[in-house]
Length: 356
Image (cartoon, rainbow, N blue to C red; front, side, top):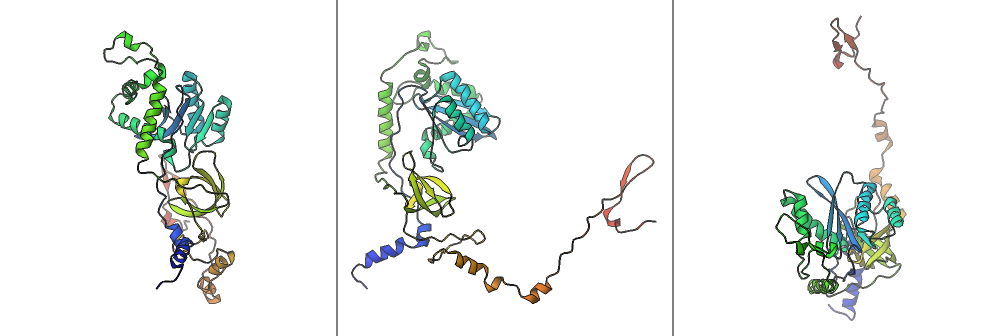
């Protein structure tokens, strides 16, 4: 069978199907963006927390020199994390920007007050999108592998900071401190003196651009921008749920969305799909099983479902239901003390017996 406009009508029906909308695949990966290259050390830093062998660590990485700072945390509170960052700022200075995820240690009033007091810009990445803080995520993997193999973690960090970076020809210590670090290997004094290179920034930009171009070979298409009040579905708890675009966030490819229950979420464009389907949200007492009906999600349908004949109890059934009688609390067992001072408790099975 065929009629004019048949393919267009089929596409319209599929695009409005709520079952197809909920079970869609995730968006294809977008081309990588070239991040900002700082012009000096400790200007832009990233922070992240990770766990290893039951211990929690805070890692800070400098975007310019790749210099890592590692701290073992006693607690996961925001105030404890802030104290360690203040200690680093006292040694190396206050950065211009600090990038982190939306963990409870960073997305709280304590950290907001800390950023205002010290005068640096705090930038958070999109929730459930660790690629937004890729510099810290990559450093976490590297440091984890080093700590797993190391017998002395301090020597491992020293060696890492003193190792030349590929394509740059300088170590993090040279770029961050302007000199090599003395290790347990024999080193001449001239090599430990400070040296400056004006070509570091150009090499960093060239290296970063090359990495982005290599990664973008398979990422050619960029997702279109979303408009205000546009109906979309967003990824939440490993499933697609309906939402509406509130506004575009000031960070790249990030949007603020609002679900039908009034809650607002922030998601990266990678986790958002435009849709024209009308998706029904089941009530909290209902099971979240598919398929979803194409009918409108009104309150009358929910009330009718709750008042169905299957859930009604007849008067005979009500009479057959035994009443719950409130029983008095059981008395604690009596304790007797013998002549020697030993305490003897009466077994609970003799609690109903009356002694004379």
